[in-house]
Image 1: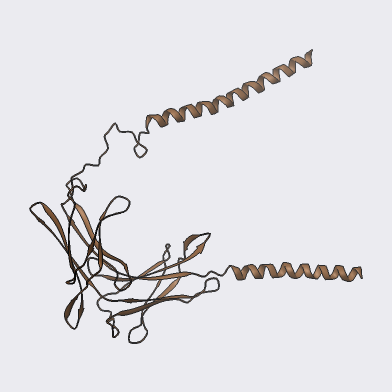
Image 2: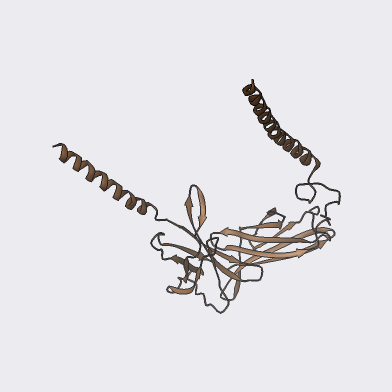
Length: 290
């Protein structure tokens, strides 16, 4: 009876050991997150951008080197191109003017993107519907008042249809981020005007880059207009020769003093320990002679 019980326990342990790696392999299959975005820059160039990532310990990890397919869905599924994701998990396809993009009955372009998956990553797909919008921006200065004028419209049957009751964001690029200047609300004619502040610092001659854009709009995507103009306050950003800071070649004096004190304390402890060991060794020799 005891032999049967031991055999049963041994078999059960073997099954648990074998099944554990198989269970772990099943759990290592990645469920990715795929995002499809539409971009239109100031040169009227259009792009489809697919980002492939997955979540690990609440962090978004890119998936590089994966094949992504782009399709046009209106009027039947048509392959637009196939690209591989870069080290940031991004694949970007330019929609050149020679690519015919049919629209549906609502005047929308329908796109989709697909990742077929593999042994370790599940397949994923995403869809997007976009209405082509033209965004225009003009900069004028009258009586020392700097004004940004905007106009947004769509084209249907060779007629311009204004985009009304939408918000266009105005930015000025700074060193590490984009500085929001205003939110311009379009009127029923698809136009808006805002006064630009006169106290923003520019470069050494006062040049500024002004950007107006639709951001992650559910119908328009991301549309941007960018212009450079001398509307800023000239600023000389060179640091003085004697200036000490963390980003200069000469460290601040407080840092040098603090580091010197810390290093002196550390090496002083080492020296004290070495001298103590020598004295202990001498005392032990004297005691042996006695």
